[in-house]
Length: 324
Image 1: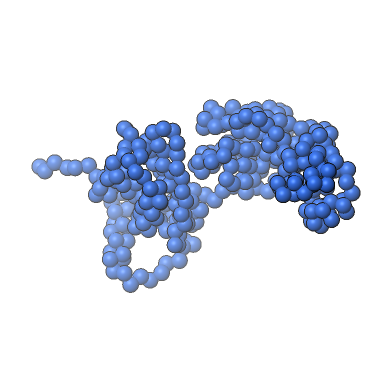
Image 2 (image 1 turned 30 degrees about the horizontal axis):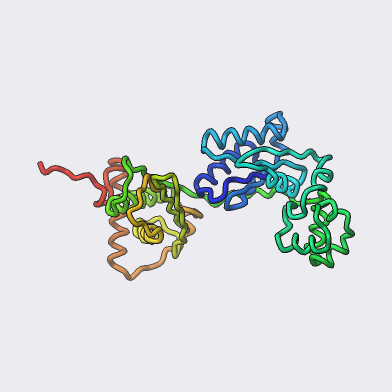
């Protein structure tokens, strides 16, 4: 099964699609930024249904749970499944090609529809009168190798004939964790947005430290009142779960958005490519101010463990207390 998500899909939503795929099959290969492969052999026996029905189940779940439709191609090989998903018109659908029908189904399709044939290769083939995949399959392999090169020619000949021995290799995206803030009213005040972002930094850093992890990168997603979104990723100089390090990169991401009185409805801050805290090198610092902040951070963690996660927060977002 080859699954195509909408283009420019938010990273967090893409991860949720992968999670839904993992519920259908134990063998899922992520193809960032918006596609995936799924091995169905074991899944068909486990669920006791047809491949087409599994594709429809996936569509139903992505629409119902995520508000996202997907195009699902199913076939005996990666090439056939990927070509099938590309032939679906509209935002979603399922196209299943039976193993015995693959070659006949491919034959009348235009040569540039074959998954793996790029625009330049397709243009070259058309100059030699090769317009359909069936014509490509009928050519001697040696001829294709002279036209496209040894490796590309052999690969194109095999795939046009429905031959593709590549397996689906399990590969999920690196572990991540995210925190969110939704504004009660559309926000365009810089101070309020920065305060919300700082609160997310504190939440994310605490979550990472509690899990014994550190983030190699951060992703900031902005959600606007008109339904549009903006997302950008930036790597940290070194893996960290400290508020100071995460805050610096988070502010850089916010500055990169270049907001000018934009009306925001929400923020999502995600720590990406997580590693165990034990894998992070501990370097001796000569910055006494930083060392003091890290000591204070450790003390605040102990206070939170004793009195609850809301016992300590950033000054910019802590509620004002009346003098008694």
